[in-house]
Image (cartoon, rainbow over all chains, first blue to last red):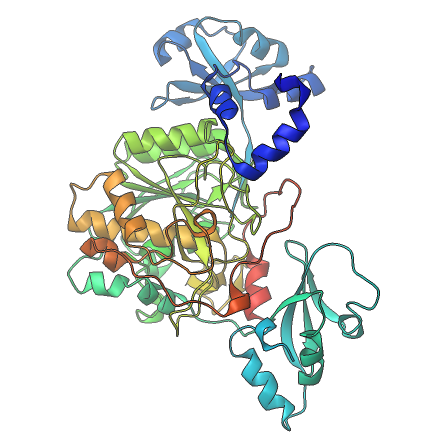
Length: 112
Length: 431
C-alpha cells in the first residue's frame, strides 16, 4: 500500500511531521552498514576508509574478534565502539561478523 | 515609505536624514527568494552592492535615505537593516544573560571543569592564566610542547565560557570566569575535522573529569535523527553525568537544518539570538539552525546571544573581526553555545548535585520566550543564567515589530556546513 504513494506521502509527512509509519520505521532494526557508508564504498571500492564500528556484545568481544587487516584508530568505551581503518573489502567483511552491531561512516565536521 | 521593513532605529534615521542631511548610509537589504517580476528590484539594481551574501538573499549597499525609502516600497524587499560598526558585545551579552547576578551570589564557576572540543587554545592569552587544567592535541598527536590554536575559534569559545577578562581590565569576561578548562584540540587549523577525532576528544574529556563539554562544531547529515556515532557518544556522556552543550548549527533560517551532533537527544542544543542588548527585544539569528530533527523532535533546546560576540583572540590568528590584538568579534551558534556551557558551570558550582537533566531543565525553563518565533527556532527562548540559578521561570521578552519576527522560510536544498560566521559579523557590524 505504501508503495503506491511514496512521493505524495513523503510530501505530506514533511508538512505534518512524524506519522505512525515513521514510528514503525524508526522502531525497525537499523541496517548494520550505514547507507551513506555503503554508498561511499560502492563509489570507491578499491580505497581504504575509516569507519566507526559498534560492538554487538561489548567492546572487549569486538576487539578480540577484529580481523588483523583492520587497524584500530580510536576506542570509544562509553558507547562500545571503535574507529577502524581498512580496505573496503575488510570493512564489508566486518558487517557480517556477529560481534558487530553496526558500522557508521566517519564524517567531516566544521566549527560553527 | 514602509517603515515596517526598516529594522530598529533605521526608520528614525532615514526620516531624520531625509530632512536635510545628505549622504549615503550603509545598509543590508534582504530580498525574498524566487523569481522577480517585471519592474521589481528596479531600485535595488541602481545601487552597487558592496557585499553579496549566499546564505540569505541579502546584500550590503550604500544608499541615500531617499533610496532606502523607495526600497521599502519594493515588494521583493523583505527587510532592511543598518550595517553597523563592530559592537563590543561580551560585556553586553554576559549581563544580558544575567551572569553577573549569579556572580554576586558568589558563583563564578570556580572548581568546575569545562571541556572545549575545538581548534585548541592560546595558552599565553592572559584571560586563561592558570586555568587550563588539561590539554591534548588529537589532530597532531605527535606534537609536543604547549597548547596551541592556529585557527582561533577554540580560544574564542573558551573565552566566552571562562575568560577572566584579564587582558581587558575585566571588560570582556566569560560567563563563568573562574571555571577550569579542559581543552581537546580536535579541529585543524582550517577549523575542520572528523567525527572520529571529535569522539576521541570527547572520551578523553570525560576521563579528565570534565563536568561540562562544549561542542561548537558539527556537520551532516541535515537533518539528523541523532543516531549517528557522535550524537550517540554525546548521549552516553550525558548518561555518564556530564552536561553536553552543542551548537545548533549555522544553516538556518529554514527548518530541518539540525545536523549532528546537534540532534543528540540528551545534549543541550543551543541556537543563537542577535538581540539588541539595550532593549528587551530579541530575535533568533537568521543563521541559527532550526528543527525538527529527522525523527521529528524539537531542537534547538534553548538560545543564547551569538552575534558580534567579542572574546579572546588567539595570537597570530585573524578569525573574525579583530577588536584589538587580544580580542575579536565572531558570530554563530558557536558563540551562543559556550554561554550555555558557562551558565551550566555557574549552576554546577552552586549545586554540584544537579544532574545534566536538571541543568537542561533549569536552562530551558528559565529561558525567556521570544515572541514571533516558534519552538523549532528558539527552543524555549533566550537563556538566562540567573533565572536558571534561582529556578524561576523566564518571562517572555517584548514583542518585536511586526515584520521583525521570523519570516516564513522558503524551501531550500540540503544545507552545506557553513563554518563560523566571521563574515556574518561583517554583515551586521562592519562596513
